[in-house]
Image 1 (cartoon, rainbow, N blue to C red):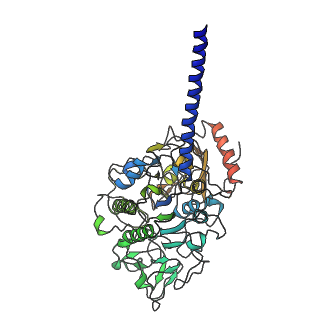
Image 2 (cartoon, rainbow, N blue to C red):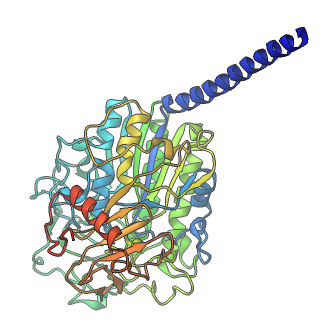
Image 3 (cartoon, helix red, strand yellow):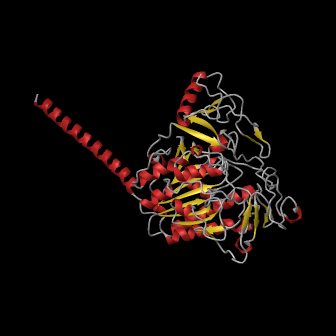
Length: 522
């Protein structure tokens, strides 16, 4: 009897110790997780332009090698269901910085170089949030969210712009590399402008005596295919007309090095305090003008060469962080504003030299499209020593950076479309978004789990100039992406219950049927 009592007593002691041990380990893990969240890292968002889901070797490309981006993917969290909100540039950039669906703001569409700022200066933004948390905030690279109030004078301070929506420092090009004005702006002022040679910009008509790509093909070093036949700068025809500002005009082949120098200067100058650097790179958007060091390196023509060039630039950014001793205290987010396009306005061998490379990574569509390749893009989070290497199939969107980073730095975000995915970004959770509205040139579709529903839209099925399927159809389209990632089998007729479910939820988010005459809840 005594031995039984002693056994029970010993068993209770062992049991109590086990419970205490498990609880202690749990508390330690919880504390470690909480400590990770409390650390205030530097934050760099690297944003490429028109990079497709299949354009990186870490995402399956075999004809292109991108070792520096692969390092981020292989040593961080690689997301296979990471999305831009939109299949075009301006809307995606708007959503990333504001945490708001771009279709909520009608002006969030592809902008000319003379467009006014489309982010309200009273609006919450990612740089504003970080600045309120004690961060220095900077942007170096492509802006394309408008400047001024719609009648910008390029010869004086242009405001409002990046500095008025949260960035302490800005060094940008106003729109895109193929649009005028072809100059850099630093904190609202054109860099290197000669006051005796003022800049004039007009998107409606040319200036007297100025050559154009349409009328002067003999002056071109790059031939236009469609839509790029206005003012000629550096032998390249652009969208829009520009006169003057000769000393301030950029050299296209030097743009990557130029922005890289500014980014490294920013990192070095702010290494002692937490900083946020938004680094929207121009590659592989047209015109594709690799530095001579990279010409021919990919074997895929200029488009492949500028992707290799961008990968090198990212490697140089990583080196700069290491040299300054801040790599382990820097969170890096990498993604692209939308999916790929080959011929986007110039003859540059992107189609002819494609070979077996698939920029879409087996998906359907591309830039401008509601099909998957329009918005599903590479998406990586990297934080040396804090994020363990891994891969996630959870649904996440660039729009979620606002709420996620807000929690990381202890700042509450106002109500928005952004969802807190911090644990997912840090590799501490496998739970992503339940649903997402995606957009392409004001048309929208709905994703939920493995399913995507595309409403009927009028218009051409294929954009002939760029040879991309747009996702327009007379009928609803419904796809199960888990079973059919290439979106070959429309299940709208065979699964009416799922179609009705997605219609209803889509309606509840959009709030009306505007533009969707056939969206009745049947």
